[in-house]
Length: 301
Image 1 (cartoon, rainbow, N blue to C red):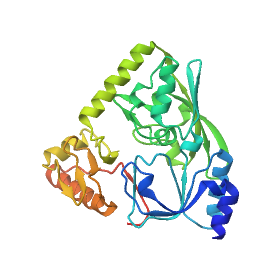
Image 2: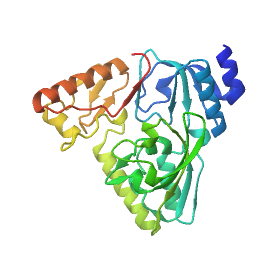
Image 3: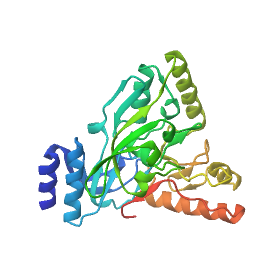
C-alpha cells in the first residue's frame, strides 16, 4: 500500500487503479489483473513513476492502446503505465502535425485530413497510438512511420528528455532506436505534404474497405501475430501449412486472414500461446521457416 500511496501522490489518486483487469486494455481482450495501473496526464509524471518503480524494485511496463500485446492470464506483477487518452492531443500547423504519444493513429490521420495534409493515410486504420507506432515503426499498405515523422521527443531511462530527428531514430522493420534504447515517446512532429482533402479522404476510404474485407476486425486480436519472414508472408505460410481456422480453445487462426490470431470470445492467453507454438512448429516442419512473434508478451502465464 505504500507504493499505492506514492503512485497516488505522483499521478493523482484518480489516475491509479489496483488489480485492474488487463482484458479491458488490450485489443486482444485478454489478460489478468495488473497490480497497479496508472494513467499519467503529464510527461513529468511518467518520469517520476518510473523512478519510483526503480527505487522500489518494482517491474513496470508502458502501454498505449494495447494493440500489439498479450497479457498473461495471471496478470502483471508490477505497474502498468498507460499513455493514452490523457495524453492524446493532436493539432496541425502548416505542413506539420503535432501529436502526443497517446493519440491514436486514427485521430492523428483525421487531423491530417482536416488540414488537407497527405502522407498519413496508410496509418488511418492502424489501431495503435502514436508512441507505439514510432517505437515499432508501424506500417501498412506501403507506408511506414519513418516516412512521415520529422522528430520525436522521448524520455530516456535516466530520466532525461531528448528531441531526436528522424535521421537518428534508426527506424527499420518493426524496430527503432526508441525500442532498442528503451526510450518512452512523449510526443512527435510529423511532416506531411499539401493535398486535396477529397483525394485524401478517398484514399482513406479505400484502405478502410481493404481492411474490412480482408481482416477479422469483428474479433479481438493483436493485429499481425508474426513478423514478416524475409522473402515470405507469414499469413501465406500459415495458410499453406493447412492451418486456416486452426483452433485452440477460443483462440483461432483467422479464416479471413491467416496472419491474424483471433479471440472468438473467451480465449485465454494460454490458448493463444499454445496455438502460436503449434503454428510455428507446423510452419517450421513444412517450410523450414522460423516465424518470429510480433505480439509482445508480458505478465504471468
